Image 1 (cartoon, helix red, strand yellow):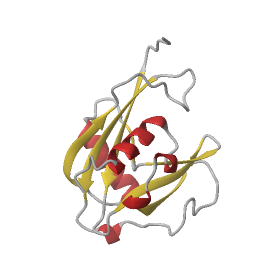
Image 2: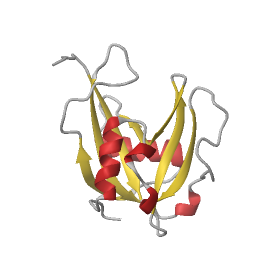
Image 3: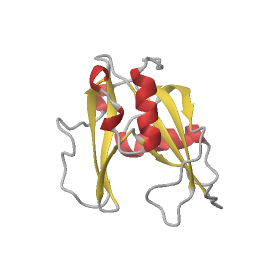
Image 4: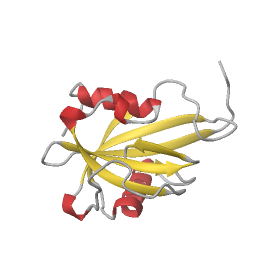
Length: 153
């Protein structure tokens, strides 16, 4: 097994609206498009829920509520975009927000000019969600868990 000396911790929110749609983030980083769940990296000294709240405020302009743990990576996964690779730990929470309409969303995937750091959010009906909609291995597992009804939406 490959060993790493550092960890990267990412925290994500699984937001399902009243229409039974899940929020996805389309982003462009390191010269490549990617689709993931909303969230981001833990800052040293920050708790995971504080990270989730900060990321939702920064990216979506809303405060997540009713935060419930959903899944934490339980296997070794190296980072895909950091060299040398670090061990990646991803933590997922189901969340609610008081006003879904406050979130600015796109009507189609990757509705932006491809430039470093570009992002857009979109709703995807849960009955259409498949692991193939997501870019990264852990997100694909979580999508499968959601598809199998392991969510509190």
